[in-house]
Image 1 (cartoon, rainbow, N blue to C red):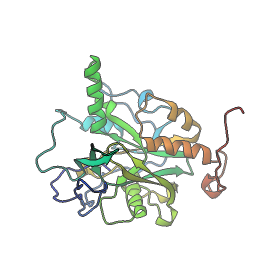
Image 2 (tube, rainbow, N blue to C red):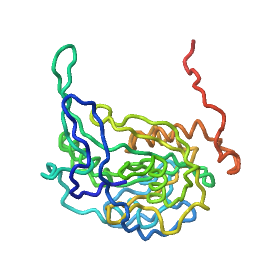
Image 3 (cartoon, one colour):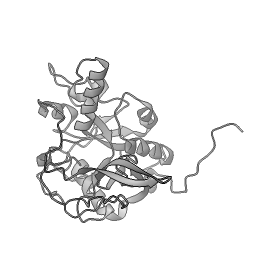
Image 4 (cartoon, helix red, strand yellow):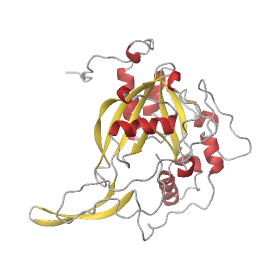
Length: 309
Protein backbone atom coordinates (compact mmCIF):
# COMPACT_ATOMS: atom_id res chain seq x y z
CA UNK A 1 0.00 0.00 0.00
CA UNK A 2 0.92 3.66 -0.22
CA UNK A 3 2.66 5.56 2.53
CA UNK A 4 0.74 7.90 4.81
CA UNK A 5 3.05 10.45 6.39
CA UNK A 6 2.61 11.20 10.07
CA UNK A 7 4.86 11.48 13.08
CA UNK A 8 5.73 8.25 14.87
CA UNK A 9 8.64 8.03 17.29
CA UNK A 10 10.76 4.96 17.66
CA UNK A 11 9.21 2.95 14.84
CA UNK A 12 12.41 1.25 13.82
CA UNK A 13 15.27 0.00 15.93
CA UNK A 14 18.38 2.11 15.37
CA UNK A 15 21.41 0.48 13.85
CA UNK A 16 24.35 0.36 16.23
CA UNK A 17 27.78 0.67 14.57
CA UNK A 18 28.76 -2.88 15.47
CA UNK A 19 25.39 -4.56 14.90
CA UNK A 20 23.86 -6.40 11.99
CA UNK A 21 21.24 -4.50 9.98
CA UNK A 22 17.84 -5.35 11.38
CA UNK A 23 14.42 -3.81 10.97
CA UNK A 24 12.09 -4.25 13.93
CA UNK A 25 8.44 -3.20 14.07
CA UNK A 26 7.66 -1.62 17.41
CA UNK A 27 4.82 0.63 16.33
CA UNK A 28 2.16 0.42 13.67
CA UNK A 29 0.17 2.70 11.44
CA UNK A 30 -3.62 2.46 11.48
CA UNK A 31 -5.32 0.78 8.53
CA UNK A 32 -8.88 1.64 9.34
CA UNK A 33 -9.40 4.46 6.87
CA UNK A 34 -12.35 4.82 4.54
CA UNK A 35 -12.44 2.81 1.36
CA UNK A 36 -13.16 4.26 -2.07
CA UNK A 37 -16.76 4.21 -3.22
CA UNK A 38 -15.84 1.62 -5.84
CA UNK A 39 -18.34 0.37 -8.39
CA UNK A 40 -17.86 -3.37 -8.82
CA UNK A 41 -17.11 -4.25 -12.45
CA UNK A 42 -18.36 -7.63 -13.65
CA UNK A 43 -15.98 -7.88 -16.60
CA UNK A 44 -12.82 -6.10 -17.81
CA UNK A 45 -13.37 -2.97 -19.88
CA UNK A 46 -11.60 -0.03 -21.47
CA UNK A 47 -12.32 3.26 -19.66
CA UNK A 48 -13.21 6.31 -21.71
CA UNK A 49 -10.20 8.55 -22.13
CA UNK A 50 -11.03 12.14 -21.10
CA UNK A 51 -11.13 14.65 -23.93
CA UNK A 52 -9.13 17.84 -23.82
CA UNK A 53 -7.09 16.74 -20.81
CA UNK A 54 -3.56 15.51 -20.36
CA UNK A 55 -3.20 11.76 -20.17
CA UNK A 56 -2.13 8.81 -22.24
CA UNK A 57 -4.31 7.51 -25.08
CA UNK A 58 -6.08 4.20 -24.49
CA UNK A 59 -3.56 2.28 -26.59
CA UNK A 60 -0.78 3.49 -24.31
CA UNK A 61 -2.69 3.23 -21.03
CA UNK A 62 -4.01 -0.28 -21.75
CA UNK A 63 -1.50 -2.20 -23.91
CA UNK A 64 -1.14 -5.95 -24.49
CA UNK A 65 -4.81 -6.73 -23.97
CA UNK A 66 -4.83 -5.18 -20.48
CA UNK A 67 -8.27 -4.14 -19.29
CA UNK A 68 -9.50 -2.37 -16.19
CA UNK A 69 -11.57 -3.87 -13.39
CA UNK A 70 -11.99 -0.52 -11.61
CA UNK A 71 -14.31 2.46 -11.81
CA UNK A 72 -13.37 5.64 -9.99
CA UNK A 73 -9.71 4.68 -9.52
CA UNK A 74 -8.45 4.35 -13.09
CA UNK A 75 -5.28 6.06 -14.27
CA UNK A 76 -7.47 8.85 -15.68
CA UNK A 77 -9.25 9.32 -12.34
CA UNK A 78 -5.91 9.49 -10.52
CA UNK A 79 -4.45 11.99 -13.01
CA UNK A 80 -7.48 14.23 -12.50
CA UNK A 81 -6.79 14.25 -8.75
CA UNK A 82 -3.06 14.98 -9.01
CA UNK A 83 -2.09 18.64 -8.80
CA UNK A 84 0.83 20.98 -8.30
CA UNK A 85 3.30 21.64 -6.83
CA UNK A 86 5.42 18.51 -7.05
CA UNK A 87 8.82 18.87 -5.43
CA UNK A 88 11.37 16.67 -3.71
CA UNK A 89 12.46 18.14 -0.36
CA UNK A 90 14.58 16.92 2.58
CA UNK A 91 12.95 14.76 5.24
CA UNK A 92 11.30 16.77 8.03
CA UNK A 93 13.09 16.98 11.36
CA UNK A 94 10.85 14.36 12.93
CA UNK A 95 11.88 11.83 10.29
CA UNK A 96 9.72 9.18 8.60
CA UNK A 97 7.76 6.24 9.96
CA UNK A 98 8.53 4.24 6.81
CA UNK A 99 12.24 4.69 6.14
CA UNK A 100 15.27 5.78 8.14
CA UNK A 101 18.60 6.75 6.55
CA UNK A 102 21.58 5.39 8.45
CA UNK A 103 25.21 4.32 8.04
CA UNK A 104 26.80 1.00 8.95
CA UNK A 105 30.40 0.88 10.14
CA UNK A 106 32.14 -2.47 9.59
CA UNK A 107 35.58 -3.97 9.06
CA UNK A 108 36.81 -5.61 5.84
CA UNK A 109 40.41 -6.74 5.26
CA UNK A 110 41.30 -5.05 8.52
CA UNK A 111 40.06 -1.67 7.33
CA UNK A 112 37.13 0.35 8.65
CA UNK A 113 34.36 0.71 6.06
CA UNK A 114 31.08 2.59 5.92
CA UNK A 115 27.92 1.62 4.05
CA UNK A 116 24.97 4.00 3.81
CA UNK A 117 21.59 2.30 4.12
CA UNK A 118 17.89 3.00 4.40
CA UNK A 119 16.06 0.99 7.04
CA UNK A 120 12.66 -0.11 5.78
CA UNK A 121 9.94 -2.60 6.63
CA UNK A 122 9.57 -6.11 5.26
CA UNK A 123 6.75 -6.59 2.77
CA UNK A 124 4.54 -9.06 0.96
CA UNK A 125 3.49 -9.35 -2.68
CA UNK A 126 0.69 -11.49 -4.09
CA UNK A 127 0.60 -13.06 -7.57
CA UNK A 128 -3.12 -13.10 -8.40
CA UNK A 129 -4.50 -15.56 -10.95
CA UNK A 130 -8.10 -14.92 -12.01
CA UNK A 131 -9.43 -18.30 -13.12
CA UNK A 132 -12.54 -16.99 -14.85
CA UNK A 133 -10.70 -14.38 -16.87
CA UNK A 134 -7.62 -16.56 -17.47
CA UNK A 135 -5.62 -13.51 -16.53
CA UNK A 136 -3.09 -12.18 -14.08
CA UNK A 137 -4.38 -9.36 -11.90
CA UNK A 138 -2.07 -6.37 -11.50
CA UNK A 139 -2.47 -3.07 -9.73
CA UNK A 140 -1.46 0.33 -11.05
CA UNK A 141 -0.94 3.50 -9.04
CA UNK A 142 0.97 6.77 -9.03
CA UNK A 143 4.35 6.42 -7.32
CA UNK A 144 5.92 9.78 -6.36
CA UNK A 145 9.50 8.39 -6.25
CA UNK A 146 9.10 7.04 -9.79
CA UNK A 147 7.85 10.37 -11.12
CA UNK A 148 10.61 12.24 -9.26
CA UNK A 149 13.15 10.03 -11.01
CA UNK A 150 11.48 10.70 -14.37
CA UNK A 151 11.80 14.45 -13.69
CA UNK A 152 15.50 14.15 -12.77
CA UNK A 153 16.28 12.11 -15.88
CA UNK A 154 14.41 14.53 -18.15
CA UNK A 155 16.19 17.53 -16.62
CA UNK A 156 19.62 15.87 -16.93
CA UNK A 157 18.96 15.04 -20.59
CA UNK A 158 17.52 18.46 -21.43
CA UNK A 159 14.10 16.99 -22.25
CA UNK A 160 10.75 18.69 -21.55
CA UNK A 161 9.09 18.00 -18.21
CA UNK A 162 7.24 14.67 -18.54
CA UNK A 163 3.56 14.29 -17.73
CA UNK A 164 2.49 12.68 -14.47
CA UNK A 165 1.35 9.56 -16.33
CA UNK A 166 5.04 8.61 -16.37
CA UNK A 167 4.85 8.11 -12.59
CA UNK A 168 2.39 5.20 -12.74
CA UNK A 169 3.68 1.66 -12.34
CA UNK A 170 2.37 -1.87 -12.89
CA UNK A 171 2.81 -3.91 -9.72
CA UNK A 172 1.75 -6.94 -7.77
CA UNK A 173 -0.80 -6.31 -5.07
CA UNK A 174 1.56 -5.72 -2.15
CA UNK A 175 1.98 -4.13 1.26
CA UNK A 176 4.25 -3.50 4.22
CA UNK A 177 4.35 -5.56 7.38
CA UNK A 178 3.43 -2.57 9.48
CA UNK A 179 1.11 -4.28 11.96
CA UNK A 180 1.31 -7.22 14.31
CA UNK A 181 -0.08 -9.64 11.73
CA UNK A 182 1.39 -12.67 10.02
CA UNK A 183 2.67 -12.61 6.45
CA UNK A 184 -0.47 -14.39 5.19
CA UNK A 185 -2.81 -12.14 7.17
CA UNK A 186 -1.10 -9.06 5.76
CA UNK A 187 -1.31 -10.48 2.24
CA UNK A 188 -5.03 -11.22 2.61
CA UNK A 189 -5.70 -7.72 3.93
CA UNK A 190 -3.83 -6.08 1.06
CA UNK A 191 -5.65 -8.14 -1.58
CA UNK A 192 -9.01 -7.05 -0.18
CA UNK A 193 -8.04 -3.38 0.21
CA UNK A 194 -6.38 -3.02 -3.17
CA UNK A 195 -8.31 -5.38 -5.44
CA UNK A 196 -11.59 -6.11 -3.66
CA UNK A 197 -11.22 -9.91 -3.61
CA UNK A 198 -11.60 -11.75 -0.31
CA UNK A 199 -9.07 -14.59 -0.34
CA UNK A 200 -9.21 -17.16 2.50
CA UNK A 201 -5.97 -17.48 4.44
CA UNK A 202 -5.73 -21.16 3.53
CA UNK A 203 -5.83 -20.26 -0.18
CA UNK A 204 -2.64 -18.17 -0.02
CA UNK A 205 0.22 -20.33 -1.27
CA UNK A 206 3.79 -19.23 -0.44
CA UNK A 207 5.96 -18.75 -3.53
CA UNK A 208 9.18 -17.81 -1.79
CA UNK A 209 10.95 -14.69 -0.64
CA UNK A 210 13.63 -12.32 -1.86
CA UNK A 211 15.74 -9.46 -0.59
CA UNK A 212 14.50 -6.08 -1.75
CA UNK A 213 17.07 -3.39 -2.60
CA UNK A 214 20.03 -5.40 -1.32
CA UNK A 215 22.40 -2.44 -1.66
CA UNK A 216 20.30 0.05 0.30
CA UNK A 217 17.63 -1.70 2.38
CA UNK A 218 17.96 -5.48 2.56
CA UNK A 219 14.36 -5.89 3.74
CA UNK A 220 12.66 -9.21 3.11
CA UNK A 221 9.91 -9.42 0.47
CA UNK A 222 7.72 -12.53 0.66
CA UNK A 223 5.51 -13.59 -2.25
CA UNK A 224 2.28 -15.56 -2.30
CA UNK A 225 0.05 -17.02 -5.00
CA UNK A 226 -3.73 -16.77 -4.85
CA UNK A 227 -6.38 -17.81 -7.34
CA UNK A 228 -9.54 -15.71 -7.41
CA UNK A 229 -12.84 -15.57 -9.25
CA UNK A 230 -15.85 -13.26 -9.21
CA UNK A 231 -17.54 -15.18 -6.38
CA UNK A 232 -14.79 -13.77 -4.11
CA UNK A 233 -15.39 -10.15 -5.13
CA UNK A 234 -16.67 -7.94 -2.30
CA UNK A 235 -18.91 -5.10 -3.56
CA UNK A 236 -17.49 -1.66 -2.86
CA UNK A 237 -14.04 -2.94 -1.89
CA UNK A 238 -10.73 -2.31 -3.65
CA UNK A 239 -8.91 0.75 -4.87
CA UNK A 240 -7.07 1.36 -1.60
CA UNK A 241 -7.80 3.70 1.27
CA UNK A 242 -8.99 7.22 0.46
CA UNK A 243 -7.42 8.91 3.50
CA UNK A 244 -4.08 7.25 2.71
CA UNK A 245 -4.11 8.95 -0.72
CA UNK A 246 -4.42 5.58 -2.43
CA UNK A 247 -6.06 5.46 -5.85
CA UNK A 248 -5.34 1.95 -7.10
CA UNK A 249 -6.54 0.53 -10.39
CA UNK A 250 -7.02 -3.23 -10.78
CA UNK A 251 -5.97 -4.56 -14.18
CA UNK A 252 -6.49 -7.89 -15.92
CA UNK A 253 -3.55 -9.04 -18.05
CA UNK A 254 -4.53 -12.04 -20.25
CA UNK A 255 -2.24 -15.07 -20.05
CA UNK A 256 -1.50 -14.92 -23.78
CA UNK A 257 0.07 -11.47 -23.35
CA UNK A 258 2.25 -12.21 -20.30
CA UNK A 259 5.54 -12.49 -22.16
CA UNK A 260 5.11 -9.40 -24.30
CA UNK A 261 4.17 -7.47 -21.15
CA UNK A 262 7.39 -8.57 -19.44
CA UNK A 263 9.54 -7.71 -22.47
CA UNK A 264 7.98 -4.29 -23.07
CA UNK A 265 10.59 -1.85 -21.74
CA UNK A 266 8.27 1.10 -22.28
CA UNK A 267 6.14 -0.05 -19.33
CA UNK A 268 7.22 0.88 -15.82
CA UNK A 269 6.75 -2.24 -13.74
CA UNK A 270 8.04 -3.66 -10.49
CA UNK A 271 10.37 -6.69 -10.34
CA UNK A 272 7.58 -8.49 -8.50
CA UNK A 273 5.18 -7.94 -11.40
CA UNK A 274 7.76 -9.34 -13.81
CA UNK A 275 8.41 -12.33 -11.55
CA UNK A 276 4.69 -13.02 -11.24
CA UNK A 277 4.09 -12.81 -14.98
CA UNK A 278 6.98 -15.14 -15.78
CA UNK A 279 5.94 -17.57 -13.03
CA UNK A 280 2.34 -17.69 -14.24
CA UNK A 281 3.39 -18.10 -17.86
CA UNK A 282 5.29 -21.27 -16.98
CA UNK A 283 2.81 -22.57 -14.42
CA UNK A 284 -0.55 -21.85 -16.06
CA UNK A 285 -2.51 -24.18 -18.29
CA UNK A 286 -3.91 -21.83 -20.94
CA UNK A 287 -6.78 -24.10 -21.95
CA UNK A 288 -7.69 -25.53 -18.55
CA UNK A 289 -11.05 -25.10 -16.89
CA UNK A 290 -11.45 -23.22 -13.62
CA UNK A 291 -12.11 -26.45 -11.70
CA UNK A 292 -8.80 -27.99 -12.83
CA UNK A 293 -6.54 -27.06 -9.91
CA UNK A 294 -7.37 -23.43 -10.55
CA UNK A 295 -5.89 -23.69 -14.03
CA UNK A 296 -2.42 -24.31 -12.64
CA UNK A 297 0.03 -27.14 -13.02
CA UNK A 298 0.34 -29.04 -9.76
CA UNK A 299 3.51 -31.00 -10.54
CA UNK A 300 6.91 -29.62 -9.63
CA UNK A 301 8.31 -27.15 -12.13
CA UNK A 302 11.80 -27.94 -13.43
CA UNK A 303 14.31 -25.81 -15.30
CA UNK A 304 15.35 -27.05 -18.72
CA UNK A 305 18.44 -25.99 -20.61
CA UNK A 306 17.83 -23.74 -23.60
CA UNK A 307 21.45 -23.73 -24.70
CA UNK A 308 22.83 -26.14 -27.25
CA UNK A 309 25.39 -28.58 -25.83
